[in-house]
Amino acid sequence: MLNLLRADWYRITRPRGLRGSLWQYGIALIAVYALIIGVMMFAKTQAYATLSGTDAVEIPSDFGSYTAYLGSMQVGFVQLCVSFLVVEHALQEFKNGFVKSVLSARRGRLSYFLEKLLFAGVTSAVVTLGSVAFITLGGMIAGFSYAQADSPLVVAGWLAAFWFNTWAMAAISLVIVYATRVSPLSYFGAFVIYAGVVPAGLKAMAQLSGGMLSVLQPLRPLFETLAAWMPSSALSLLGRGGALFSQSAAEVWGSSSQALVIAPGAQVLLTGIIWMAAAAVVVLAIARRRDI
Image (cartoon, rainbow, N blue to C red; front, side, top):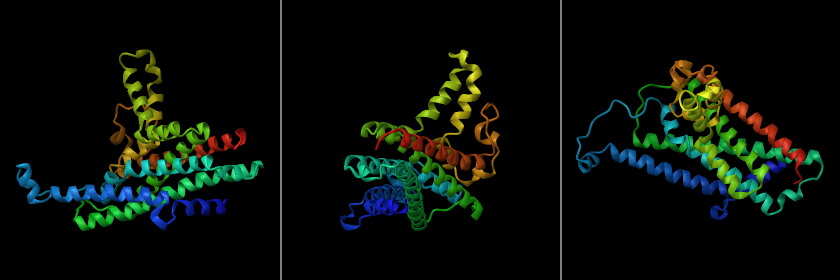
């Protein structure tokens, strides 16, 4: 399994000509972040105030906290890049016939698919930490300020939850790849997961159950619970920053919510772990039943 992981990382990190997909997605991320930070820096200048016809206004701080800054920059971009990178890599191995070289024994198949799940996790961690480093450096150069300081424990918890849910989204994308092995469907499925279409649909059903679709009223708690426990929902909450870890369920989901939820900080951590485990079970089931 570790040999397969090393081989995968060699292919996505080939430095010659920056042909590895990790470099390509990384450069795209850096370009986007540099543009956003540059625009934010310009928006604080007198030149921007002059061009926009408004007076420059001093604000006490640019972001509520350091993790709020990370959340505003990372949520969305990192997940899309990681999911597409993992999907591209998995499909490529079917296309170039690499998968056929895997041992035909069941143990060989299971090792291969388990390694791909591990590959998704390592890729998620590397892209997350790389983007954190660049965003932090950009914030220092731009002189961004924060209303309050995050404790080391909050930062660690936020990063862990972000990583788990990013990994979960990549793992779910792998399920689609191995279930369909069709490029357009795999990329489309990964995008749907990234965009949070499923929880948005569940929330819409929950709202309609109180009106047009009143027959579904008994299912409202189920709809709201499923929506609240989706990786994209967890990442949306993480976009608010580490303050999430000190908030109550009522503060996050509202007192009228009928969802079965727990403390928000614990929930965003558990959501990623649960969906990673579920994706692993499905991938291994596919490995047992489908020929490579």
